[in-house]
Structure formats: C-alpha cells, structure tokens
Length: 134
Length: 293
Image 1 (tube, rainbow over the protein chains, first blue to last red):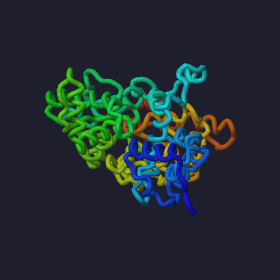
Image 2: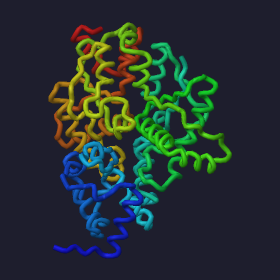
Image 3: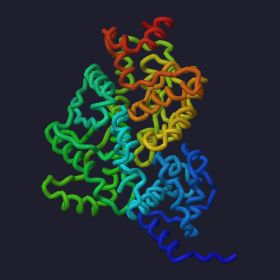
Image 4: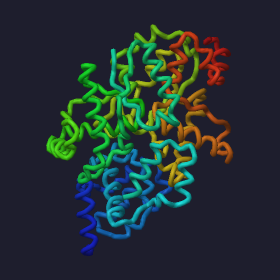
C-alpha cells in the first residue's frame, strides 16, 4: 500500500513536530495513552488515533475536540513506553488552531461570563483561558 | 526558620481555608512562611510549546521576587501551597536550568528587573513538612490524635507529573500518607490517588469532571473513607462540587467531605481546637465515637 500525504498534511506534521519538539514517529500505536487518559470518554477521537492522523498528515485531526478536552494532566506522557510527550503534542495541536485565530472559548460569551460569577477558583478560569484563547 | 512563601491567586479567595490553616500549622511546628511582598499570577498552566517564551514571564517574575527575598532571609528556597503554582514554578525553573540560553534571553528581555540567576529551589509545603521538619517532630507535636479517622489522601496530577518535577514516587506516593499516619489517622490506599480530577475542564466540559470524580469517589467510599484530603485548591473544588451534582443525579449514595491536608493538620496539632472542630462536625463525631478526643 502506498500512502500519499498532501502538502498541507506534511506542513501540519512539520508544525506539530516543531511546536512540540517531539518526534511523532516514535509512536508505535500501543494505545497506552488512550487507556490511561481520564477524560477519553468525552473525546471524539482517542489520543493514539490523533497521533496516527498527524503521522499520516490527515487534516481531519483538526476537527476533533480531543485536544480541547485534554486537561494536560500528563498521565499519557508518564505512561508512554516510547517516551513521547503526548501532552506536548496536544498543546501543539491547540496552538495550530489558536495561531490560525480559531479560539475554543469565546470569553465575551454569556456562558463564560456567567462562569465568572459562580464561585469557580481563578486558577480554573485562567487555565481554561490559557488553553483555549490565543 | 523562615521560608519565602508564594501564595498564588486562589489561596486568597476560594482556597482561603488552606492558607489560614497552613500558616498556623507552620507556626505550631516552629517555622514561618513569609509571604513575598509583591507577587503576580504564576501562569497556572505551564506552556508546553517549545517556541513561546512570553507565557513564562509571570513565573519568572515571581522567581526574581523570591531571589530578592531570599537574599534577606539567606535562603534559596521558595515554598508554595498550591499544587499548580508548584508545578509551573518548578517546571519554568527547570527549563532555565536545562536551557541557559533561554534564561539569558529572558533576562535581556526583562531589562527593568534584576537578572534571574536560576538557583531558586521550589518546595511544596508537604516537602517542608516531610523533609525539613520530619515525621518524628510532627508526631511529638500532636495534641489531638486523629485516632482511627479513615483518611483518603488524594494527590492529583500536578505534584507528581511530569516526572522531572515529582517530589514523591509517581505511581505510589507516600508523603501525605506518612504524615497522616504520624497524626494517628488510618490511611486508605486508593488506586485513583494520582488520577486527574478534570482540572480546568470544569469550565468547558463539566461532564468529564463528573466522570473523573465519580471514579475517584466510588473507590474511596467503597474503602470506607471518612474524609478525602488534598493539597490542591482546584481538586478540592472539583471533588466537592462534582460530588454535589453526582449526589443530586443519584450516582453516588452520599457525599464524602473533601478538605485540605493543612486543615486536618491544624486540628491534630492545636491544643484548643474546639473552634476549628465546629466547622468540621463530621470529624468531631467520628473522633468522639472512636475515643480520639
């Protein structure tokens, strides 16, 4: 079987590798990251599949909610037998979106402002803004 | 002994109880936490990208404040109470240690501040208790042993991951358990103790947090814990509020109280603890039943 990777796919892979500083081809798809992930139930696509999509340069990866749902708890990075820092790859994918001006959270939206009134600790609000707004 | 101390934003608002209790515990154990005269937010989450330096500025500024205060107190340590502050400050510090060129660049950029030299040591309050004070001394100072109180220590992610900043065993941490045993409590072994509570997903994806908390609390309750203790203000918030929703939905049978470790320490270490115990009736009842008081 012959894989053809589109120009844009190649660019995405290169950008992700650059931002995360990880070698994406270290991953051999054992799925340990997905097994360890505490929020995998809310994800459209399991983390190991996301890595595979980046490897093959499939742009569909950017439509998934996986990297927004990631809570950056580093469990995947701790469990990976190939020492791939998956948390960094998720951050890279978030950054690919954010740098193209596609924010996840609209801080001016009513829902978000209502959250501020609730007694949510600031650290949660600041963390969500840092992960979801450029 | 005096330590420079960085509170962080949440300990001044929703996590007030933690700070109050910890400052008093420090006094009872014979050391002082001196708050940095000026401080800013640490950034809360460490920026994992390799090319954004601006996100590290606020943490760096805090490190410079610690350096200034450390000169006065003749120490290079900085104590934090919040797990997330600990994580961010320690990761930023480590990044500078491994990449002196980045430290050089950031010192050039922050030209109105003094240069950061990269030799501050970040400690969590637990580390101070465990390493600098020691279990023996804590044992001697216990006034109200928490006899037979079943406590489930919950660590969360930020103190133990990534491995480079962990102060305890990553998969089988024991520091909190050892301290609680020294207070006379029974420590419950919960396999979910290092699992994530969902963290900031409470803003955008509350369902995920409910799932995480249900898994943690189910095991804790099946092992018969009276109380869950945690050092992290966000874990405390998530575990408490998510349990409330889970209870309303009928997914758990009862709610286990979640308090800070420092609060439990204060109850055990202080002589005249009637005032505090009023706030923690569940502990008072349990202790009286089991002859702890």
